[in-house]
Length: 277
Ligand code: KIV
Image 1: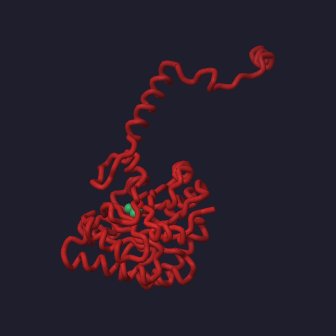
Image 2: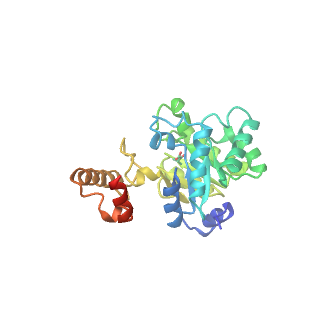
Image 3: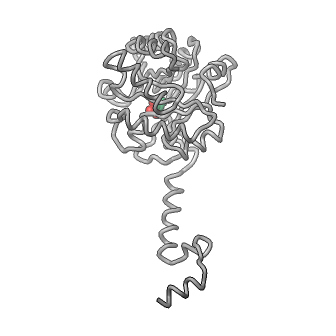
C-alpha cells in the first residue's frame, strides 16, 4: 500500500519529520522504497544531474514521463510525485490540467509538483479539483533562474519575505497537500511552516520545516560538478564507483576477470565434435 497524501498531512499533525528524496530511475527508486522513504520526487533536477544540462529549463514532458514511469515501476510503498517541467503549466489552465493528467495516467505517479505561488494558484486549484494531488514549490524556483539572476537565496528583503508568506498561503488555499520551500532563510522558512496548515518540505531552508528533500545524486556524492551548501554527503559514490571501475579495468587487462565462477561450461563431447569439424 502506497503512502497517501492524507498520511503525509497527518505526519505534520503528529510533528513527525518527513524525509523526501529525488529519484530518476528504477534501481535507485527501488532502494529508496525498500529503505522506507515515504515520498519520492522525480524532480526536473534530472535535467542537470542525469542529462547534463546547465539548468532544468530544457527538460521536456517526454523526459519527465520516461523517468517517472521507471521510478513508479521501482516502488511499492512510496508516494511518487512527478515534477511538471518548464512551460507545461504556464500557457493555460487547460494545458496545465492536460499535462498534470499525463503524469497520473501515462506515468502512473500519484501527485505532481509545480513551481510558483500566487501566480499559479488558480492552476493548482483546477488540477486539485480534478482529483490530482499537487505539491507546491516556492522560494527559489529553478525554472525561473533567468529571471531570478541565478540559483540564489530568496526572501531576504522585506518585500521578498512577505511574498513567500503570501505564496505559501495562496498555495494552501488552492489545495496543495505540501509545499517545497527552496533556498529561503531558515527563520523565514520556520515562520511559514508555523503558519502553514500543510507540510513544508525544505531544501536549503533550515531545520524548521516539516520535512527535508535532497537530490539523491547530491546526498550520495555522485554529482561532482559542484556541491551546493545545503548538501550533506551521506556517501562518496563518485569515488566508490571510480575505484570499482579502475579495479575492473585492471582485472580485465590482467585476466583476473572473468573467472570460472562468472562463465558457463558446455558438454565436453559436443565441444570435441565442434573441434573435429
Ligand atoms: O527538481 C527537483 O529535484 C526539485 C527539488 C529541488 C525539490 O524541485
